[in-house]
Length: 329
Image 1 (tube, rainbow, N blue to C red):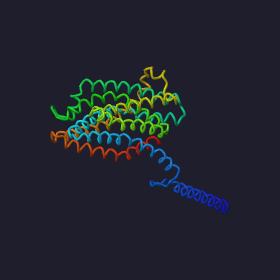
Image 2 (cartoon, one colour; image 1 turned 180 degrees about the vertical axis):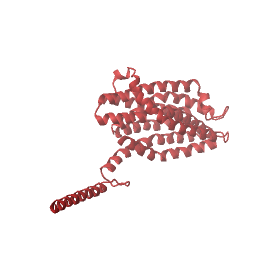
Image 3 (cartoon, one colour; image 1 turned 120 degrees about the vertical axis):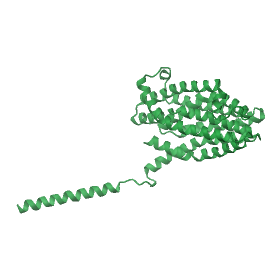
Image 4 (cartoon, helix red, strand yellow; image 1 turned 30 degrees about the vertical axis):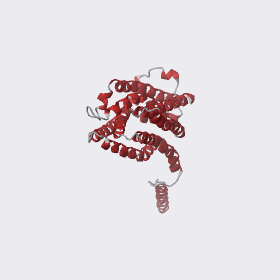
């Protein structure tokens, strides 16, 4: 009996020692919230740096547009261009919930190695995006003044510059959406360098074309809109060609309407993200309307446009990091 008791006691002590050892080893594996330059940190940095550069291109090009419009020496021209640009951007981002959802679906399909599911996700996003862009462009082309009234009051002097700019930018709705979906598709496969090259090339074209159209050809503010439209078309065509080449989309799926069962995850995910986009962009429109109504000279609105452009460039780092986290998870 003594021997059995002693044996049981020893066995119990051994179990306790093993459990303690396991707990200690588990505690040692707890990940730190601070960068340790381990494999995860290196992976995050590898994806984040191209993302930051890619997201920074559009605000920087917006700053280039603003720079050249400001060189006209007319505060009303800056006010009109910034008002139309804000209206287009807000309208675009309110309906452009597809990229975030597409990146998630593509990332999931890519991780499981399902090429068919990946093609379905990208193709469905492009089909829905095409329908949305048709409606958005049609409204801007048909009712430019009513849409601009969300920012500019009736008879505002800046309206003469804002209306032609918005009219031309309305044609960029579809190319912009294709580019965003393309960027999200490549991002879902953890390829951030290809979108960076496309964005850099197309926006370099925009930066070169701005002064030529605005001053050499004396087109003024509409010249800036045409340069941006040209850059968006180049970007959209490049993304579409590469997605076809890498078999991320197929013509047969693009020309066939998807079933509700396949569209449901895309639309449900988009609806959840829609609330945040609507809230943010309604705030931007409200602020823009207040600054546009401060004076009729356009000086206050021009100053606000410069300030918000700097803010957008600075916020790119945070946006890129949130995108990296979404992609990795």
